[in-house]
Image (cartoon, rainbow, N blue to C red; front, top):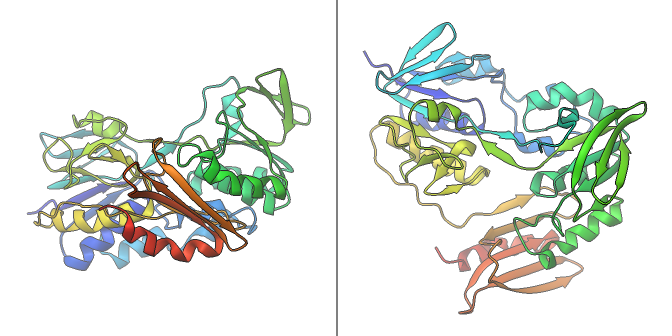
Length: 377
């Protein structure tokens, strides 16, 4: 009898994979093991919960039970996997084991919390569960500090500001979104945030947090401090690699996989935020969707390598949305920027005159698809 496919994880990657497998095979045994409730929600919605005045339960789109019934699978929510015996093809939890023919790690990534004194006073917003744990605190807070000026930090800063809160954004870089694009490209969004009232503390280092009678004191470099009600860490994600490591699979920044999403261990695959595909960690929706389609085929006997096209990344800042694609972080590009009341188009061009990246904003975002075609494959 077949042991079928076992998936460890509960997020977007795990769900997409289940849906793609079931499109092709209604009967292969499917088991999903999740550390949380396994209720379905749309993770990008976490960037808007505060301004939309949503509770965590409002985010649920489908309960775990409905999902299990719809897709004919055995589901084990609130179950913590402790070990994987790759040689015996066995997954172990505290009081349960599962045999597998193929195993998929879709363990996601956890929010990184800077190792400063008082770090336990920081909250993170990387899941419905994390939001549930602090929603009352966040809704009641008047003064919010966000640590990290990347994608998530910038989105949250705008959201809290739209909800009428006093927002301070702290980052050690000289501009926002610095890992994604140069300052001259992100400056339009930076000005918009400032105009809305977000207090930007760039080129600043958070040193410690301490409780006070009135909230939390955040101490920064250059003898500065600020008093706030809540501090949110938005300093990036760390792929969850511990289980893969215990299974003997090779890990780097993420769980290393090839173009077939196979790890270095036979019959073990990785997908989503935890996977490092040919050296790249791609925690975005489009590569996960494409990866799930390819992996479903491969788990069912195919052998389709994943070839990722140039893909759009959306910055969810409603007062000034952005789309970007290509190698926007490359240091050697010359940026050609056009600005008008409709928005911005920034093209990153290499020394040969080839467009390698672009960023578009507001009403100019409709030009993204034509620009996407001009990027090298």
